[in-house]
Amino acid sequence: MSWTLYHNPNCGTSRTVLATLREAGIEPEVVLYLKTPPDIAQLRALRDALGQPAQALLRTKEALCAELGLDQEGVDEERILAAIAEHPILLNRPVVSSPRGARVCRPAEVVKELLG
Image 1: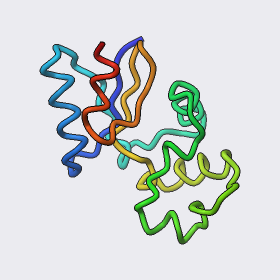
Image 2: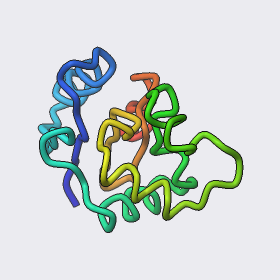
Image 3: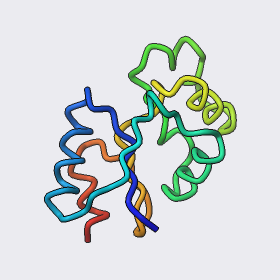
Image 4: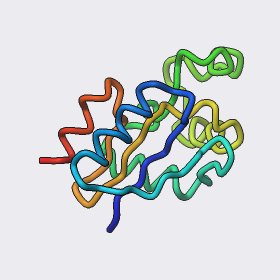
């Protein structure tokens, strides 16, 4: 399994994570998720690799999150994943998938957990 970074080049945290990976000698597959959004199956796989509920992948600071009612307690995971697939701006970036699992790297230092 290779390294994948779900990346937004306009995000400072995402740029920092990419630089950290490269400094460690890792050239990840960079997915510009706003241009090439992950589908529901990819989001399920990311959720499973995280070992956390789908809410971990949700960018709750995004206004659309509240507009869609995704910030309410008890929202079904499939509804969250479907919303992220339809509106990739809702993906809590950056997300790194690696042979050692996956992490939402916010703050950027979280990526070091995957580097060992």
